[in-house]
Image (cartoon, rainbow, N blue to C red; front, side):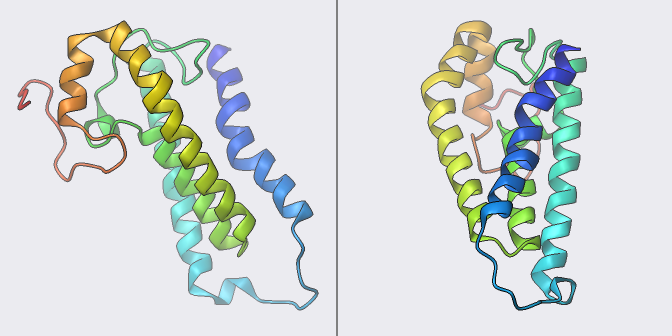
Length: 167
């Protein structure tokens, strides 16, 4: 139940509720455009699907391996360094960003693109100032080694193997 609540409270509102709100109030011209004809529509669809896949994968890893949720009020009990976490430290946020940019492309919305940028900047500051110090306190040296080997936002090409600590 905690997992469901955290999904509804966080990614659902960030990727669906707020974008719908922004689209509702966005000033659209009355001219009709067949969006399906534009290449960025299809690129947006691909990004959205990839983002949803990444979100589901990372939320599942948090529940199964981390024994917790994505929510700060019910965090993981174990450090998760599997799957996409072997490439980048914040794949869940990457998934949300892919969804938001995909939505912006599908709906040709600068408001949604602006929301994606604001969401990224907000999370960047949150991770640096709050999340990462908290993870260091909770997981200690294993988290330090993880941070030395896996970047915050730019994915590694080859997955990091925790068994081969390359520091």
